[in-house]
Image 1: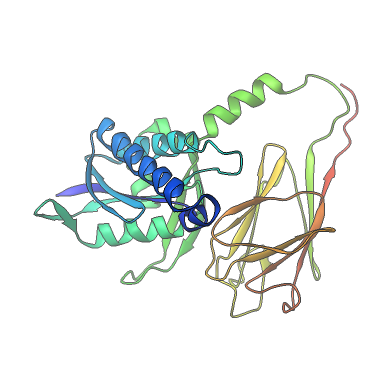
Image 2: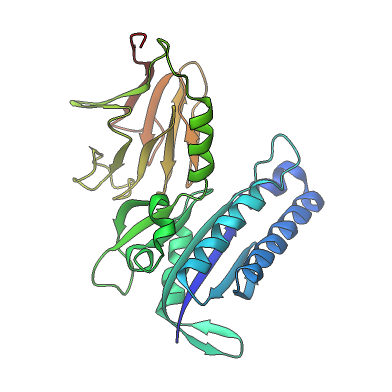
Length: 298
């Protein structure tokens, strides 16, 4: 039989224990698991099992899995009560044939769903192209094509699709707050790596970085993943999204270097980003600068 298999994992749970202590962190993770289970049931799915700080669920349709995933992200995002704690999930799901036995499910569909969850960044919902094609038109505005990845056991690379679970809310906010006139300009991001330059803004909303020569900024380094990271424009902010094996290193001007590994970071001011290794070891570095484009009054 065919089912949508979904894996949802609490992002950064190890850091929670270090930040909050065992008791408080355990309570928060348990709340996350309970919330994910409740969302599964409400969307007509079934929780197969919990694995540490992750939930595995099955659904009768891709739409049900997508709805449950979006609801999980929304509700878990509201759970953190401390200002320093922002809870979110990494979610992946795939539609395909499964074998059921003693309440558990097995097969290639399960393996791919688990892999998609592993590839998701903090706060992301990831599926693949074949599953996205099974979604109703309701989800079309929220789908974003990412990149292809090799998957063990698959002859062809798998095309990743992200479901932007917060898109609708963001767009509504933008309509309410957008000024009608004025000389405030659109946010731009200037990027430079060696002889390669790019400018992000309203006309260019994403650039890719990796070892693959087809990325916008190829990096010749074995520590760098083929599809290592990307920078996205989200309204008037630029966000570095790392989905690599070894992480990215960001230095804001005048501040210490920080590592970003399978998570997101909003870029501010100007600075330097290296991929796969710290700046003092890297031969190639991406320099960025956030600027404001001038617009004449309407």
